[in-house]
Image (cartoon, rainbow, N blue to C red; front, side, top):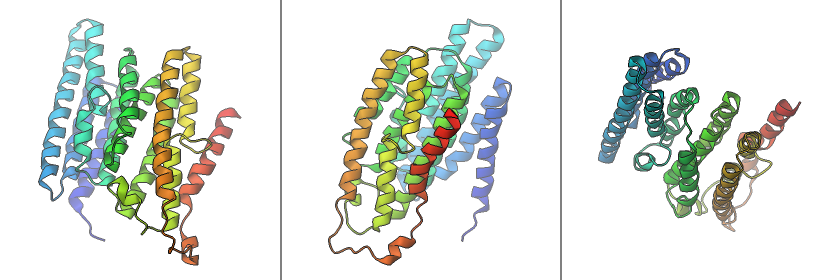
Length: 323
């Protein structure tokens, strides 16, 4: 296997930056960690396509603007300006960085030119430090939550690109994550489950070399790979009793405790739309097998890791939470 020492160095710097932002006890160190992780991540976005350079530049500009807002909020805090102003700047800067509505358009443009594993890093690992910083703030973000759930649920319905579908799913899940951001245990659990599902889907899509929905309907794929992808899609849609249903339950429990019935109702309605889309996509993919394709013994040698994770993980976590 080809060893690229530059990428190893950049990956280590990115991990150091993320860890520095999470573990720091002062705002300047958090800002420095964010900048280190962003500058280390940008080279991974480069491919042979000219459009990838444009995406890298736009990502750098947007993240720099968000970092400027963050730095302005930190300076306002140190100088002693009104608490509302500095909290507003901090929250806006972090909302831009994680790409939730109404600051989500840059995510849709950038993901189209990324490889699947780089996209996974962008929508999971790179969003952890901003979410940690948001958890320190107390500003009301209900408008951003509602917009993220609505945009993520509605606009994914007419998409054909798998990257844009995953991007809208990320916007939707970020909206739900903001709803439980006050509880560190809940949003960290949500992030772990969501990252596991996204990573599994990325691996399967990369293995199948699928970029658009119509490519999944082709009948040249191993049936077991299709079954794994089918189960993962159902779990992403929140179908019980799969693993993706657990974050929805945790969010509903927290909304009930806080007596936020309107937010819970919006979450349920938008989740139904997302589940309907993933159900349609999963069944379209699953039930278009070629009649000439046999289930040979070699298919039984495929690993069932995705199936076991989706089926057994909810039981394990449920026993842990309700014991």
